[in-house]
Amino acid sequence: MPSTILPHEVCMKPADHSAPVTPRGLLRHYWRVADVRRWHFSLPVGLILLAGAFEAASFSLLVPLTDAVSQNSFDFLDSSRAFGWITALVPDSVASGPGRDAYLVVVTVGLIIIGRVTKLVLEYLRKLFVVSRNERYRVAVTNDTFSRVLSFGRQYFEGQSLGRVDAEVGWSSAVIGLLVAAEELLRFGVGLVVKAAVMVAISIPLSIAFIVSLPFVNIFMRTINRAVTRISREGVEVERRQRGRVLDLLGSVPLVKAYSQEESAAGAYAEVLREAEDIAVRRDRIVSLRYPVEEIFILLVMLVVQAVVIYVSGEGFRPGDLAAFGAFLLLLQQALPDYKYLSLFSLKVSEELPRLEALSGLYSDDGKFMVPSGPDTFAGLGRAIEVDGLTFGYRSDVPVLHDVTATFPAGKVTAVVGRSGAGKTTLVDLIARFYEIEPDTVRFDGVDVRSFSLDSLHRAMAIVSQDVWLLNRTVRDNLTFGLGRPVEDDELFGALGDVLLKDFVLGMDSGLETEVGDRGVRLSGGQRQRLALARALLRDPQILILDEATSALDSVVEANVARAIQQRSAGRTLIIIAHRLSTIRDADQILVLNEGRLVESGSWEELLALGGHFSRLHTAQYGSGSLPSRS
Image: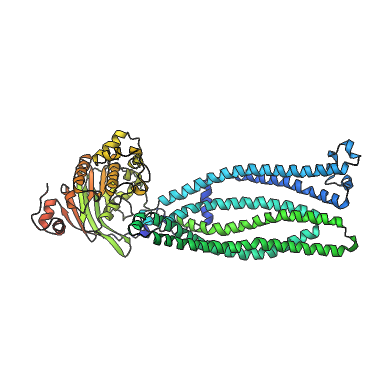
């Protein structure tokens, strides 16, 4: 007997199991997905450097301006190698007159303004490009992450909160956040270097004091960064729970309403919100400390150094020298935001890396229960579906099916019956390749089902279960979902007519364009099932699997729908799971499961004559009187 399949053994690339994806590897993957080009970075970097050059030219003009204020004259420009070119901008008629210095003030200030305006224009152009590029990247990486999640096996979603999955898909934008932070690091780094150069030109002692104070500030910053990282990791888990709680409660509104638990549901959500609030407050409390502390510390150092300079200068100090100190403080005030934004980069990394680490787990195959697609195209069923010694368990210690061997003849109707929990749905789900199985335990015309591509196999199938899944779209969208071909209204109404839903849809305000609501909430249970049946019939499948697909219908509608299905499915392979035995009277073969084992098989009359499990199921539904024969 084949060993039980363990969920954690299902994978697409076994080699990847022992080597989970790292954040660095995930970054490389995302760059490939976003089709990143070098010029995507070189263009904004070039604009940053060019803007920095104009900013440097603008700020450098503060040096001759402060010297002029200190000396009360621009005469020093005549011998200045760095700024002598400014005098060439003075007309000859003004150069020898008393208005020369005033004219030079206007020219210098004008050049400063021109430099700043040009710098801002270049920054605006860079911003336009970066926003467009980043949004394109964001679409690419988010779509890749979502596509990756959709490739996981059904068992992964059965064990995960949808809110958790939703949050992790959203975290893919963390990689864009890191890119933005890296470019901002360069931009503010260039700005800081420019201002630092001018500050050195104005006052070497003050510049040295500023540089010496930075390591002490950084010690304080590292402590804050470690605290932010720790709190951000807590925030990742709380964000998962918050999204999970929202989707869980919104998806269970009928249950909440039925038991009048609105207040309790709101309280459950408020509990998670309070956790998020606590984390946000703790984080901001720490982050908010850094900027006042570092700025006060640096300004105090500057004042102390300037006081020392004044004291050492003694009688040589002139009040005009305060102009240089004022210009230095002005540049310092401009430089401190740059330094703050530089430190924000490390904070951004501290916040985004925990998300990237969590996200990288999505790109490991471990625990994703992915069902590998085979290399061959399924061309159709000619003889039979064969199940041979199939044993399966969702958990290693709880097998659901035990050594099941059965044959589903092509073009025939096979019914699968049994008590709840007998393994009926699991059996048909394995035939449909929703879960991984042992090799050669399910064969289509003697070929291992694992060798067929999932796409070609599922194109030949249609499955309708008792848990109907509808999209929050129109009736038309739900009918044509996955069909892959244009469909005329007549064909749609033909399928709706087969399931006795045509008149109802025609009576809707918007007909086929009517929105059905989330999971079809605007329809009754029976209408949802019939809409799902019509969708399956439109596919004209070679293999139709009905898993309690009419359980929400009354007996009259069920009988009419059953006849329409059999007429539509004539010559097709039909597998029906049913609790109501009346729906399978005309089945060519009935398989009886009990506690995961195939205990009986045969026709309706043969099974009744056995007096075994099927007979007991029949008696439980119809009583112990005369047993109706097959019609």
